Image 1: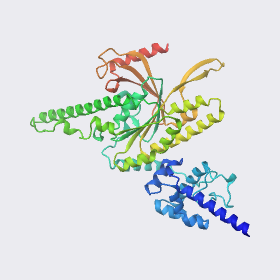
Image 2: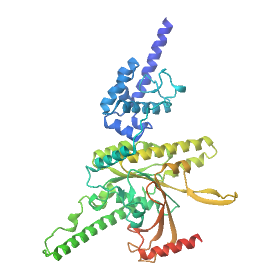
Image 3: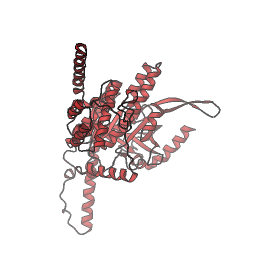
Length: 474
């Protein structure tokens, strides 16, 4: 009897210690979906201990129905949704070798109180299908709600290259994961910088009027990149002021043509532009996270939901997330462990999870996720087994299937004559090819990188660029 009593006391002490350990685990440190994190954090659930506290009676009685109902009431959701949240947290804890937040680990759909191989991830989720019409209504309602507190109703971030924006249906779409791949020096980072600056464009001028977050893996943004951002921001402000002046003059001319007085509108051009719209404020809205290895990059990305939520509460929502580049640290880690097959499988799994996470992050916070990628060599065999090498985007086929849209940036090795390009300096012609999109046909657009940023190709040079490309391919 004494031995059994001592054993019971030891088990109780061990359970208490385990529960105390669970109390200190932040939900942000677990691999949870952004929507789950947002739902829990908005209601004050910051750690697994908060979920355990909500289920105190559950842990005593071994019946999780009451705890799930209490959690659903506090979250303002259905009981089934609350149960899904708890199951997801339990799965995340199981993946790192910790017990669930509830004492009863019975899998939904099983009546014998057991689990298959004691793995809580093997369960029935009672998933209920949704119709396409209901999903469309939900998406439209979500966009209307997110735009209700903003003067902007734009759904794309413009690039200031009209051919490129037309190719993409108006610009880079929100709520999507877009990949930009290309050779070194082809203009991937320059295009991303332009989009981060353009994300600050006021809503009255067709912008999304949001902030930008950059995951800087290569150091391109944290050094000389800041000077480039400053020049792009100054050019954008000058462009908006010039546009406001032209609009004001056009209105005056129209009034005079209609018989109005010449001085009926005394509005100064600077009054047509928001006072906050300055190069300094544009750069204040671009948040750069410098990451030095794969672990730091992954940790930073998985902790972004809290930062994005904080920005929304401040009235400064993030509208674009740039990862420059996603492949860099993965390729470095793979080269170090190139002989380890298990490491390759682990990287593939990690990338697949990351893609799903970024997709949901884009949808949950209504922002554009831009993942920059390298090119790598791939053996290209024909039907006879012969062939050579070709350049393809890195990270493999699994990643390629995960992105919403894929763009390939290239250059012609042909310079426009001095003084002829937009911005008044010599620029090199680039191409951006849309090779994957669920809602737009494939195509190619030309743009230029100038001292003022990304600009469209003048019409007189488009034909020259096409001829140069054909000559290069031949």
